[in-house]
Length: 338
Image (cartoon, helix red, strand yellow):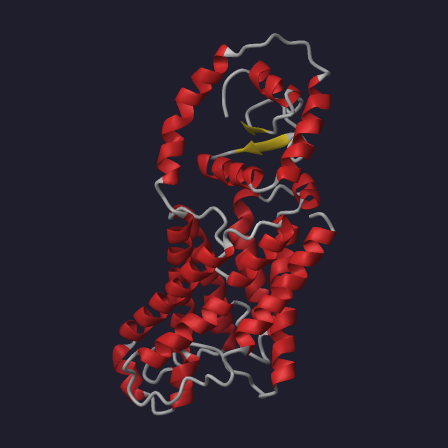
């Protein structure tokens, strides 16, 4: 919000959490204690959504704001509220024209287009990237995550989950599950669409590649050594690391010491890069049910030359493992009060 410092202090005194621009003096709003200081309209609506979904957070901010506001001597300037509302109403109208569901679809679409794209480039015959190796694949996936996050935010989803395991984890943390089904559906649809476009992009190369397992690997994951208990465990561990560290990035303790702000997408992409390099060897690190299931369905229905089966016997592993890992991480994040 904008306007007078006195209006913001009045809001705090009424036990209302405050979201204000960072050009306000530090003593007016204590970031993470009585409200949030934001730098952009997108961040403003992201923080507002967090407050709407968390009654406990609103209460904590409100009580702290009321105590904090007692330090100040100020007049009530209620007329400023109408001015502030009129000034920012057009921003709110524009922001809500973009749907979070569409944002999740587009972000996951770009994620899979670039992620499966790098795998296809490395594995398919007569591609100029053929034989690039694991380092190229993990690096490409890291950039895919970064691009997907920015796309999701630009298209209306400030959450930019792109992953049902992350959506479930933060639903557990916030105890609000309203987003789980619509987000997961959008993510799955986006993953299917991204994989379909990878097929189109590399269309001549499918005929040049005789191995059906290589073709399937361009769409979905498979284990290096097939052992269901071990494969599920690997996916649980890798997804737990993903969700828990993402939660740490946005935790109150980290925000107080190291303001991450716009570096978030870059840090998450580096994290995915690290997971791929360190933990990706056993199963190919699906760490995302939509990332595996959507492209696997695409592989099953697309007319790929001599493609073989879609390995549905393994399909449950990259769904169950990441969801369990996300649930464990979400529960621990909630327990630790990130």
